[in-house]
Image (tube, rainbow, N blue to C red; front, side):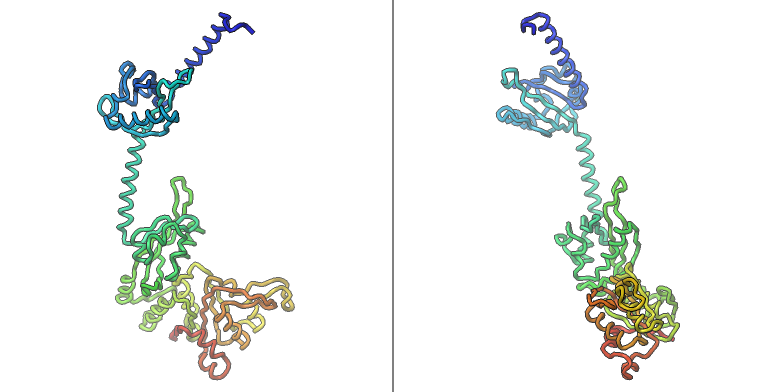
Length: 449
């Protein structure tokens, strides 16, 4: 290896250092952010073109310029304090934001990172600064804040309740009307599962929300009765839509709840309906039945629908289901008079493989299929005493056993029964259980001939 003082070797090292210096200068000039170095007095000793553009001074004017020249007095004092702390702590300061005054008097917001400069002997000689013009960013942020303030003002002033949830059904936004209509306070709804806020009502909103989130579908003007403990007669119109981001990503859903109690009452008084869920009738008796169906639709009670054959008892049962909170859940019909006792028991409650001859596989019964929904027991007056006893247990315990199985199955099913027979007479004749009769006849809807 040549000795260190070899002229050729020294020249090579000098050339390499020169190239490194030129490369560094080129890099500094190419970066979009301003670069500036100051001495310990705060006078500029090195800078790039981007820095000149930011403060609005020419290249020649920047040389030797003090940082105090483009700052107001208060800002200059703050910057001096930052320099002072960095000098003593020898630790860089990142993203210090302040306002500069350009040569033409205009002001710009800048974000600066400052580090201590040292010489070869590790002695402090000044500071290096990377300066980014964030004026446009701050302007956009302020505009976004103003926009959000306007939207929040509109959001708060709307009379309809507006509630947004994410894909996990957690509430992300709710306006003042939501608290007024649903009687819930902000600290109980924000950031919590939507279902936690439905303890005092029919929970029909939950089904609407689930349908929108799982199917990503729009639901418009679905009317329900809240059965709220504070407003038992409150009727609302629900609309729910998927909530999407700018890129089309699915974010959750927005639920709009409109109180239409007064409107519904006025409609009842001023307008008689000739059709209601496919039931046709303009007589006073049919108008009373329409109102009765609406009244019982959201109450979780059994309903007995009576009337002659062909009067539309199944239509009335469907109207009870589809105007209630279970509208998006199953509606299952069983014709009790069309099946023998053994087959009816299997059809209602299901059976396990091998329970009887021909039972080659497990079978799910109608009650299990109707879970969370409604089951219509058509022609209930024709069932046997054994089936009556099993039905009574389902109504009392909300559970049953499949044929050939001893394991109970719990279900949440609303029961509607219909018949063209006089069940009271059958009770007196001993053909129908009195306790089952009164379990079924919590509410009776009598369809006229």
